[in-house]
View 1 (cartoon, rainbow, N blue to C red):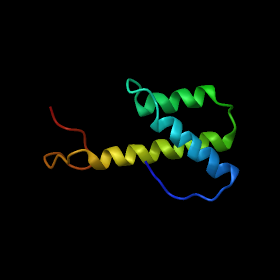
View 2: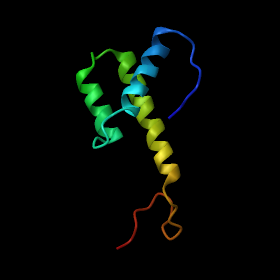
View 3: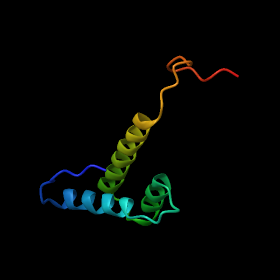
Length: 81
């Protein structure tokens, strides 16, 4: 999770609160499930949806970076078999 000192604006506080909710989710709920649930339950204002999508993309990039690279498959092509 990103831990930067964001300015004290309503948008920054909202992002910090959403990150806290995702980080402190129940252990049996995945990050993707938590984000989908928050999208469903929270008011559908554009700023909240943008923040949640940004967090989702950021976490997906982090998990992809941690995955081992399979040198046997070409980039962009599905594995054979």
